[in-house]
Image (cartoon, rainbow over all chains, first blue to last red; front, side, top):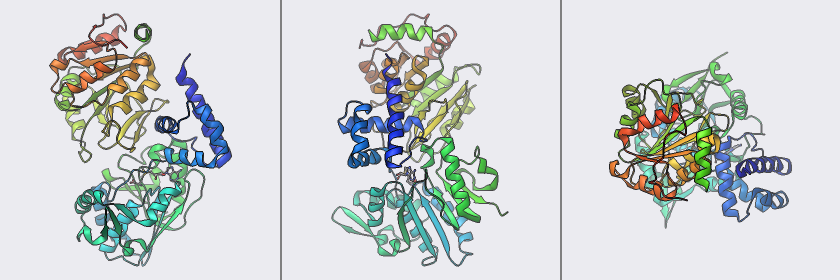
Length: 275
Length: 213
Ligand SMILES: C[S@@+](CC[C@H](N)C(=O)[O-])C[C@H]1O[C@@H](n2cnc3c(N)ncnc32)[C@H](O)[C@@H]1O
């Protein structure tokens, strides 16, 4: 009896059930990672098998929400990949400055660090008040955290280091106030960011964006779902707009690839061609 | 019981991939091991070398320059090709998808590491089963032992660098404590062992050094 094959079938059925009952579609997520996460969730949840979990899952919203938290891993940090943010500052912002007002979409923003990093960067480059950011995620619990803009103080040291490597012009300490073990980001960073739920597997586009960032989200998707996301980003972006992917993601093998030119080669910043 | 089954299973299957986990002392160990494999080595080789999160891709370049095999840092969705060596990129886990492509993940650390050997081994074992050769080399931690056990449970072959030969012996020792290892060898003999295994799977007598499950 090959138990792992049984488990593959159970996982398949479980994701099918989740899609039909709750409308969340994880069937096109890359199998190795989702299997790891589901197995981890199962071990924590106290159910013995996925079949056993299934019965509860399909009837109890709270069991489903714990599964959702287990499946959507939200690891992020301020100025993640400093070299990337430096390249945005040096090579993308000069183009953005030619517009009176720009719109930016962070797809899969997790707890918001990427959006806040971008706000710091744009404010320092003299674009305060000239942008609106839409930061979206499938997971509403992380969006709630994101909109609070509060981070563990223990992370500030690493953030500060990243900020400096990313070409920060001020002192990172200016951007938060410390209260006990927490760092609260300043209101100036929050005011032009809208946090909203959006599921890349089922929801539609956001219009007329100058810049779309979707970093370390599509690595978890199978090719078909990646293509869906890229179509979504492409129809959201203005000609001459920018698309930023995670450092290990590429447009090379994607249908959309030839509509974009790569701006900063290893940093995965792409520019949509005109016409 | 499990080990008898898996020994015969490994003999009956053609090998499909090699997965290697290594930490402290890895740059030297990988140069030696990969350097001794010919360009005609037919299997893909997947490697997790523990590396700091902001390291550049220098290691892949260095190994590529010094080895007959093609060595590259894995990109998401790389197709796993024979005779090619894939290194996990800094700050990402490397996994194997069931369709034979590679995947990366930015999930939290596993076994205190990202990339983690356990993550690679467990996902590769799920896909390649008895067709997988898992190797644990020098390292000063315990990553890889749980994964090597999974490789054995799925019928694969486990090779560990002789702790006496390793720059850091903890990782090999932990692996040997976790599962019944098939071969415990020094680095110097490892490339030859791999070539023999691939040429005639199942015909080489195994060491008795590992612990029985
Ligand atoms: C690893 S985090 C990336 C965070 C940030 N972009 C970064 O690079 O640091 C991945 C995020 O994608 C979100 N996500 C996963 N599936 C999604 C989907 N179908 N639609 C929208 N967001 C999704 C997760 O909830 C998680 O917050």
